[in-house]
Length: 304
Image (cartoon, one colour):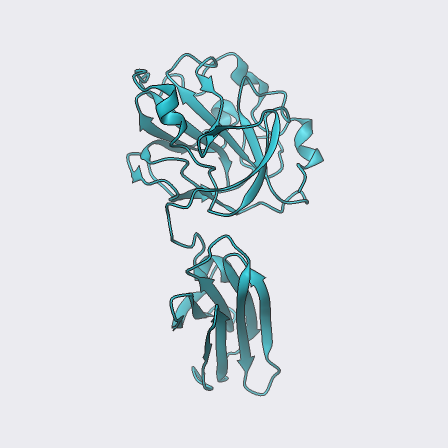
C-alpha cells in the first residue's frame, strides 16, 4: 500500500484554517480534566476491525500539527465510500458540511469527555447526527473528498485528536490501541473490534434503487440477500458476512435468470461477496451464496 501522490499536492484543509480554529463561534470550549495516559489507551483506528490503512501527517501543507490523512488504496478514488467508525465512544457535537467555513467539508466531531474530542473530515456521507451517542467502532460516515468550493482533493479521511480548545496547540498526537502513531507516516491494522456489525448493508452494496425482497441465513457466518430494482428491472444478490469481519474468507454470491447463464462472484472477501446483477423483469430467478461452510441455493422463484 502506498499513499497517493495526489495527496501531496495539498489535499486536506485549506490554508485559511491556520489563522483560526475552524469551529470558532460554534461549540463552547471543553474543560481539560482527563489524564493523557488514561485516554490514550482508549482510542482505536477509525476504520473497521482488521483493515490496514496508511496515515500521513506531512502530506498536506495545510496541516497545523499532528493531524493525519488516511488512505489504503493505490488509485485516486479507491477509498471513496469506505466506512469510517468512531475511534472511541462519545457524543456527536458536530455533524455538518463546513466546507465554506474551513475546508473540512462533511465533518463529524465526537466529544469523548474530559476535554477530548476527535475530528473526521472530508466525509462523503455522514451517518450520525449532532447530539447522538455513539459507541466505539460504530459507523459514523464514509471516506470522501468534500471540502471548500473549488478545493479539489482526492478521497481520504482527515483525522484529528484534540484536548481542550486552544487551537492549534490543542491538537494531540494520535494514539491507537495504546501506541502513539509513528509520525510522519505509518501503516496500521485496525483493532477497532468493539463492534461486531458488518459496516455494509445490502442496499449499499447493490446500489441506489435496490430493495431487499428475500434473504437466507448462512448459519452464523452471514446472510445472502436478493434485491430488486423496480426502476430498471434488475435483480441483485450479495452475501454479507457476520463473522471474520475484516479478514478475507471464502464468500460467494450468485444469480441465475431462467434461460440465462449463472453469474457468480466467489473468492476470499473481508465483508461481502457481490454485487451480482442481472436483468430479470418478468422472469424467474435462482439465487444463493456461501459464507464459511454454509451454503444456500434457492429454487427458481420470484417470477415476474
